[in-house]
Length: 81
Length: 280
Ligand SMILES: Cc1ncc(C[n+]2csc(CCOP(=O)(O)OP(=O)(O)O)c2C)c(N)n1
Picture 1 (cartoon, each protein chain N blue to C red):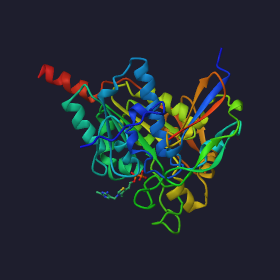
Picture 2: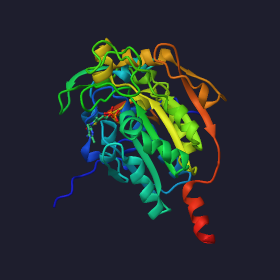
Picture 3: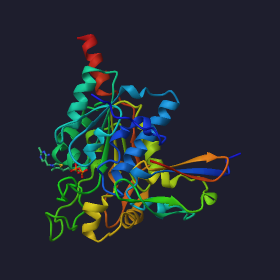
Picture 4: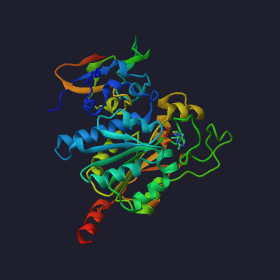
């Protein structure tokens, strides 16, 4: 059975605020955050990790290797640097 | 000398020089999407035991796309403008166990390097060429490229590009390549599958990737955000199965045909040469 929950990891310092992931997400659960990374970009945040369907469109479209999705026990957002 | 720490976070990080990230490419640049698809193809092939990534030789020329060689954790070379293919050819002939990949821009490969491209395809040279077509000379500030659509504004064609664009797929077909496909950054999964199929093959393999350059191309022609240019590209690309490469239209106003246009298994140059020496 496919996992029902997903862990979405944002590699904050790689994000360049291009917003492709935010626009491509079919569930519209990604949004621009308020916090700035080391390069002065407001990196993407996950608003409702519980709504993630694990399609990984955000992961595959990200030009900066800054977001990825894994099956997990519970819905989760992780910020890595 | 202190060695910079190489953080491993993302699933493809083991193939990247992560200590150099974030890379230089602008927000929303399609080169990163293409490189990511390449990394995923290599990862899948390696996980299936079908490739040894330490044998990959990653060669790129000059341009924004050419910068990719500096971010990959493979052996590689950043070669003079237009000369990525000859470099890869030389390396392959000296070390036939290598798996050469040329990852470069449209200006580099079919502009200044156009002749090398034609003759490597004619000789069926053993190399996978990933041509990132962003329709512009991006690194140098947006001059017209041989792939720029007719009528388009660029910094050197302020009244619109008067020339017809080149269709790399048709050129490779006329010269006789083993594998020819065109994909776009709007279809990263199909692109990855195509790279995965072509990488272990022999002979000349071309995968053209129609990319987006939001900053130097898109912004100049009225697309203010990367997603706007992306949606525009989504509208014009069409996937067609089982058609001849000579029908693979490349027209930014009407349609850009994506798909796999040629899959053959003719002997690659290395094998032909080895056999000639055996009898000589
Ligand atoms: C021999 C030579 N001529 C010209 C240049 C200047 N130059 C650097 S990059 C470039 C264009 C690259 O365009 P493309 O291959 O499409 O790459 P992009 O930057 O669009 O990825 C040019 C003309 C150079 N570096 N060397």
